[in-house]
Length: 319
Image (cartoon, rainbow, N blue to C red):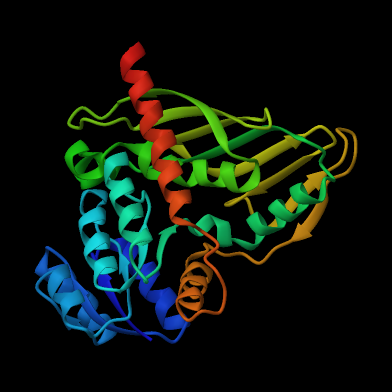
């Protein structure tokens, strides 16, 4: 399969790794910064295209990874889908809800596939956690606790903290994964609230936030994200009516831990250490080839946008 990369920043490295591992040929790249595109071209042997339209119109690619900033996602995705080119789009799926809806409409009208890039779903430990919850061994879900934060102070100098490009701050960028994990593991979200703060002085988006949600089944979730936390932390903790499970991305990355009562010993369930990119890309390409349906739907990407942007709106109304 021949693929293209639209947007050649840091995240493109992981997509390229996934495509190479799946034995797909990266044949074309594009970026608004020629130096970035040239660097990826040298890395992959791909041809540099002047923009995403030229890349798609070339007829050289069956699929693309969209790795550009969120403001550019919808335009490139819609163009590709209308051309019958399959799309793996980095999170957050879009810049705003309206853009996500345009992408959904284009996907519904296209023979090509659109998959939001929620790589955490493909981590072996997360898959094991979902199986554990589905088995009922932990009982009914009660509390979902998730944090993705760390000392990312350099974000102040990047597009990640510019509203006009990113669409939001750390909540949209990071907690888009959290919302998807909650929906994947716990259930559909029916209510959300958000509190945020901005410590950076030269930006116009939040750099720390706490998003709380409620599922249809009554389970509650708390999701924390920050670019300015002095400690790196990434974990998922789920408490049910019969027990608890925890996955720590950094401290214990190769196992899921769970127990059935507070006094019980923890059970270690081995899980291969992974960041999910290789598995995600392999799954996407397999779906393109008709081997299986997409595990992440367009609606999953849309709902993540609706929940977070809806929470942004509520926060502004009440602040």
